[in-house]
Length: 412
Length: 199
Figure 1 (tube, rainbow over the protein chains, first blue to last red):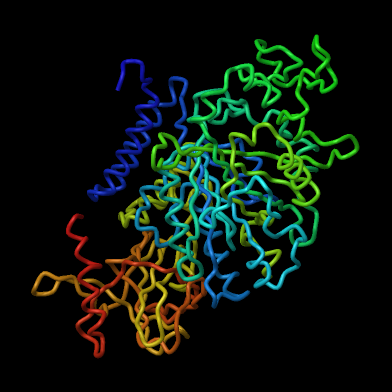
Figure 2 (figure 1 turned 180 degrees about the horizontal axis):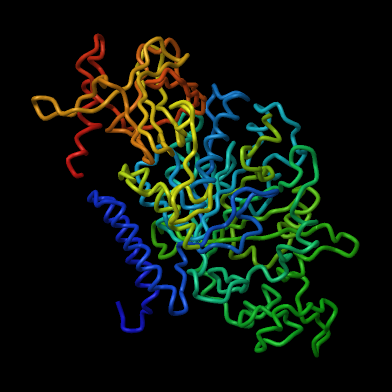
């Protein structure tokens, strides 16, 4: 504890510790509540500094949370394979249990049969998002979205099965890694009768409070990553992300690509070359046709026609942003990125095994994601330092109302 | 925020098995909005109407096994009420159980005599390692996610129906030395109960 720690924060923390401590040793809750009230009165006087752990994101709604939610600091993607004997009725039972768990966990309420309810009290914006693979939808006897299948093979791919595909996706995210660990384990425990864990991919961003919410993330190459994302809450976002098709209406899709980044080779690339590869300045993310020093220049429109003194385009035609940009008249080729960095255990002579969990959400994978991916696979200077090693596609069903469950538009 | 935290802590306290003596006025404030005031006493004609069941669940089990069910019984009236028996279509033999320490110091479960009494304005917790409902001789498996109906009968003959959801759960391996054919359960029971020494 430092001198600068404000008393309201301490009071809040102490209050929670007292309640939990009192519970553990069996102190009467009457006494606990009396002190709880006294501390609350004390804490109300100065400007309160609420605990980040108390922040919650609503679970029920038209859309599942965890997509238009301001990205939390930590995430875990779990890919599961269904057991052979799980049929449509079994899937409904599974999703009822998982929905109840998620609804409770995200609001700081222990799920039924949680042996560690003390681990649930600080959600820190915990969200849980479920996605269905092709076999899930088939067993549910539902209409298969035409895009719900593995992406076609790309020349740049070096996919590994331990990071790819699956029947059920559970995406858990929170600003607190302890909360995330417990929530993930609790949810996975309740899948045991129905599924086996195929892969687990944790990711991270900046810690909560390190920079202003809404700041475009940087990936581990140091690049500002995601500048052109549609903004949640806008019509643009609605159009890009939310499906209007049948049981998927209000849902979306996720393409999760695990992209290994060769940081050792990237170290050999000097600043000007790095900027050219991306088409943006590493300094502030501004396009090369704008200003590398002014922060707001990040959002300036790139000028792909602008030429330099020797007649070449300022933004090289093979730069990442030039290749990923939709062609004129193809404005539907847009996605919503909600990526996370990963670091795994290095092997051999490596000192780093790192990359990006490129999570892309869009209403239609074929119409929106695939054209971009095809162009990037054909030509993108960045490919020299990046390798897709995992790939999966899931249908993210809509949210549900209280009393319903995630997937009820498919399973009931 | 404060109200939410208090609610949350109360729910946590309930889950941890704290006696919520005298707290019902606050616990029920979400319903009647009278925080800190005298709770609105409901005039009830039967004991069953006095009680609400929440957070009911039971362990998954295979056919032929026995399995325990848990939950929270809340009595929001001025009178004590007593559950005297339980039935369920999932079992021909459903019992109200308590945990006791036997002569060797081991925790054992046994059928409770006199039923479960839920004091006025109080909560009665059915939880692993404590009081619970036991379903014996299951004719068929209880699978994860299934809803199992129960009927509680009170001392005045009134009945209360509720359903519990089945969940995979590694704990609650209560041993039982008073019922034929449960040798397997006895072995598991030591694991399940040994952790109780900490409390």
